[in-house]
Picture 1 (cartoon, rainbow, N blue to C red):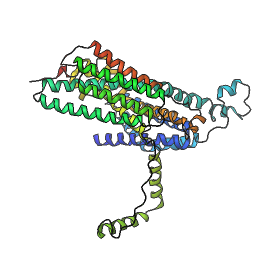
Picture 2: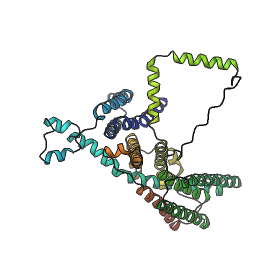
Picture 3: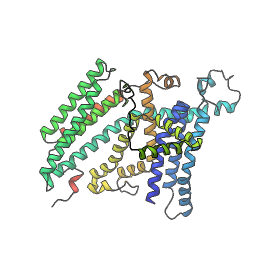
Length: 438
């Protein structure tokens, strides 16, 4: 059973990561939004079906297993339907409201076209609402990332404080943690130096970067000097601020393309022994005899992976990590102690906050799709100012800005400074207060 769940989760992640940007790239903005909405709706109703299925109901449990099995077919079918339905952009840019109340409905040949046609009532009520929801949810996702990152940083600080003060090998832990903190700060400084080398940095951007780095250095030094923080917390906070700055000013691609090296002259002797070269030649000939369908599938996979932006994948992985970690840290801080770090949130918990976390964990596939689509839209909007971003604006997308990312940077540092101001210098935190020490 656990192997089936792991394979199903890996399949879901792979399909989500590959298919949604492929729909945006091939079919356009409306196609990507429609596919994302259909995918989120499918997993939303699937989660409701799982919640409504008691353990004693054999029929509904069989239905849940049937739906989980058929997702291998449903997901590609939804992608094909979205590409077929929304890949052609409508020539009339007016919405259904303008076409209805302006008295110019001559382009709609029938009532069904006005309701079900391109940019009609049904599309506006579904894809349009989904678009607005993702647009207005971007600040929520961004600020939630900062808050959850701060929870993870403080939990890591409490665990390392307990290791140094209560464990038997405190000196070894102290030296090891200091080396780790120094490594984190050194890596962060390197990426901060890379940011300063980007040609698109303006005077205003340089001023904001200087203010952010000055504030985070001051807050980290205050935490270490007052004893309310430690080097691990300070290094992680500094690394997160640098990560936010790096996300603002780069797409994780080199700013100046590196010219390929000139081809070297052929050597007089083969680079490998003859038996290896003969095996390699045999393998190439065997691959060339494969059917053309396999070559087409391989080319399709390569093209799909080329649409995935590394910055979006890294942001998604980090955001999912801190959101998942916060669902374990919040119950530990509230009442359960360290035992909650190894327990899944449950709907049967007596605490209201833990029940909310349990509900969010049940609907995590739909939340993941919404977060990923929001990151993709934010990426497309940010790159719409470049040479290749006109297609996003021409299809109704907004020109992006980094206002909420800067607000997240300032809010995270302000919240950590407030925590330092209100907290007391103690050895036991909310996570480690329930741990036993001999």
